[in-house]
Amino acid sequence: MRHIVLIALLLLAACSRDDKPTPAQAEALRPTDARLAAIYERSCLNCHGRSDGAAPLTGHASAWAPRQAKGMPALLHSVRQGLNSMPPMGLCPDCSDGDLEHLINFMSRAPT
Image 1 (tube, one colour):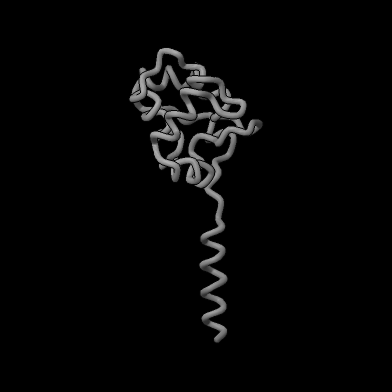
Image 2: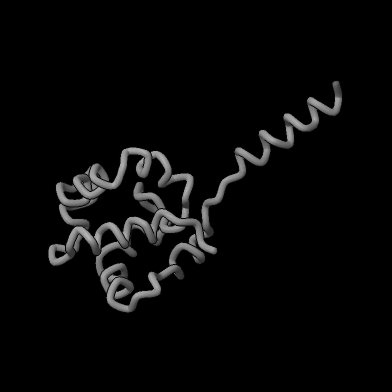
């Protein structure tokens, strides 16, 4: 019985482990594509690369998970329309849906 309790506690600890990057890690992340990196730096970094706002941090996969569960069409709609403190188009009026999708995918992945 002790073994079962110990295993259950270990599993709970592993599930609750936070994957939140440090502020320095989040701020250092950039897309590998230079064009997307430039867009990210001018439009996304200020809110998603710093831990002082309500926006989910880049690389904090568990914070992005509930948003991703809504599906990409819903995420794109939120970005296009704006949501809470995020302005319409996320400060990227010239971004295509493809650009936005790539940036969302980049920001929502844990760093490797």
